[in-house]
Image (cartoon, rainbow, N blue to C red; front, side, top):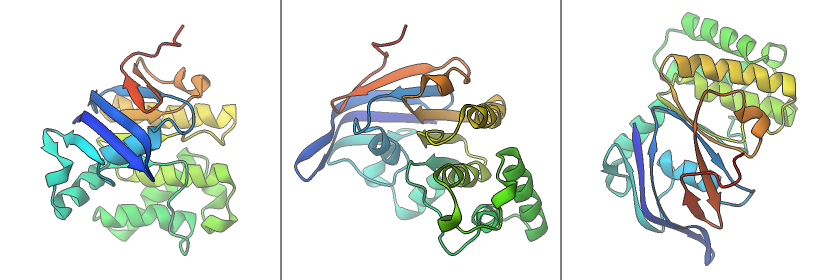
Length: 224
């Protein structure tokens, strides 16, 4: 899957979040996007997920302009591209297990298989102990992990993730990297926004992208 940004600008309340960004991103490989908080990383991921449209310019997914995508095409895109944002988007009335199981059900898995897959995925991510908790009963790190579990339950072609380990300790970062790397090994692409070098060192060789002042560069000027 190929993503294109052509002179993309996103403006909120007269302020530029992204300004005149042009780039080609390969969704079949691993790309790490670096930048300080507020640099526009989350906005870029939402553009690639077709959750939002640019104020000006064009975003393309495999050559298709998101401005011209019908609702059905957007929904299909989101079925094969997982998204994890810093502010978890969980269904508040469902338990952790039910939140993840709902994704498998949407994919058409039979209930028994959906339950089995959910339990296996929660165990893999270290969430078994809170599978019956509701979102408001979770810590920030547990909410992050549950959001990641929902994204991985899609078995996505590409995972878009914004600071997915910001609230996790070093041991859990290794665990999450292991889970993500296993899927990369099976062909999943990853576009990861983070400023945590400790986590990116756990990933395979990757392209580095730097966002600063709403601009995007295809090399990280701070890389050593």
